[in-house]
Amino acid sequence: MSWVHRMLAVANVSWRSSMPAGRPLALLVSLVVVPILDVACQLMLGGSLNSPALARIGYAGGLVTAACQVATVMASGMTMDREEGIIPQILIRRPMDLAYWIGLGLPGVVAASFTGLVALAGTLVLNVGHSPSDFLRALSLLPTALFAGLALGLLVGGLGLLTADSLAPLNAVTVLLPVAVGVVVPAEAYPAPLRRFATNLPLGVTVQAVGDYGLSSTAVLLAEVIRGLVEVVIGLAASVVALRRIRSGAYLRL
Image (cartoon, rainbow, N blue to C red):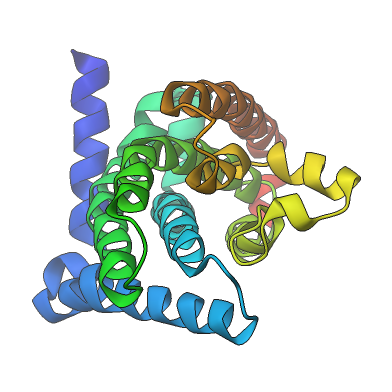
């Protein structure tokens, strides 16, 4: 119970310290306006490229955006804690504290659940003419995307502990990941080596499953769980390296 209590305490502090939480208008913009504008931009980009599957672009983009939002909340919370001097205290007491990381990510999961739903519904409304079953397919993949975002957040947050700019790994991932996994241009159109690389990236299978009904939701979830566990291990290992730097004094010079 103490583990759960610590996790919920971190989640509560993380949510209350976030900017939208204390500003209703900012909350509305973050949860509703931004996802709809994001979907509209993706659909216009796909239309400018004469894409035959605009709905796939909108749904895939919504899932990737939801996952990146979870990772962003985690990495931003970690950065704030680092600036306040909290990170060294956490690592010294518990070098591999999953309760802390999951607690950081829970507010992001809640927010991304809503924004993801708004993005998917926005695609359904803005891109008329496609089957509603595509919407239901993307909706069934949303929990998988949220889990992938949680694992991705622990990865980029952990790696951020080792860099002078804590948000550098997050910024790199959020910029490159949508292109790499094939949100606008499907990974199936990539050369074979790049296609295999894209499939093995976080959310690679999830994005592929948006248009590939041959992949079951269970199989996609299993693939993301396996990949996510690897990301968690890397993120926690990075926190152990950060602890060694703290004890040697090198961490303070970053």
